[in-house]
Image 1 (cartoon, rainbow, N blue to C red):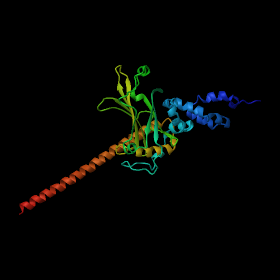
Image 2 (image 1 turned 90 degrees about the vertical axis):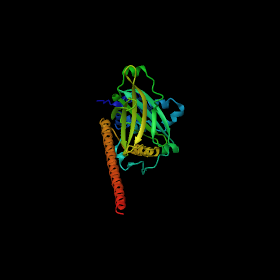
Image 3 (image 1 turned 120 degrees about the vertical axis):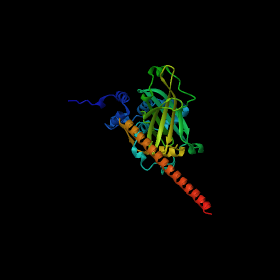
Image 4 (image 1 turned 180 degrees about the vertical axis):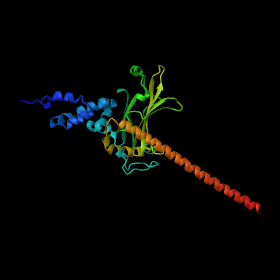
Length: 324
């Protein structure tokens, strides 16, 4: 009796089938047989998967001067780095403490950070941007880290598809992949789904916040949405910033060290990871509030002691004058 296996299919047919798999299934196929591994590790298959997962990468591939940035990172490595979440183990020994201190890890030697930013609504891409950030200047090293994928002065144009979708900020999804071409590594610093949705106190815009806690600090990407004339929300700003445990902005140097730790740390996947990221964010906010309250109590106690000391000095002087 002749037994037919999947490997009896023509390689072109198998290759076409593998291109329809998601990343997790494609990685599992690599572990099945030697023949499937040879097909499943095809760089073009992984490149197509990355372009489908992150449409912003197509902006890099379409421009010859930027194509070399994408070539610095093999597509299979890119997917393995950017698709899962950085593990909680990245926090071990990497905290900045209460201030923007130095980490034991060296600062990456690369001169450029590339951010591939994609905003989705119900799985469909709404906005894709690529931002190149020079990371070697003294201004970047000393200044608070902040990257603007979409500036408020240059909002995204209102498309018919976006107007028809009428996206709600609470249903948006965000991927913010930071690539270091010099190291050939990447990390996704977004929680994918919002960890909080609130309104700006001054502009009244709705802010969808996407955050991950790494090294005791918070990477927070904010998508600002303004209400259009027809009642649907238009994306007006997309930014990324980093805060330490006291709520102070982390400098470019501190951010480079955090990114270096996150890129080298193990990854963790699973459907529960967005909820885990939200839980860690809420714990971070709670700890920050507790630190502020504790600091306020200490300052109030110091003020009380100073006032008491001043009162004692004044009373002593008055008594000395009265007893003359």
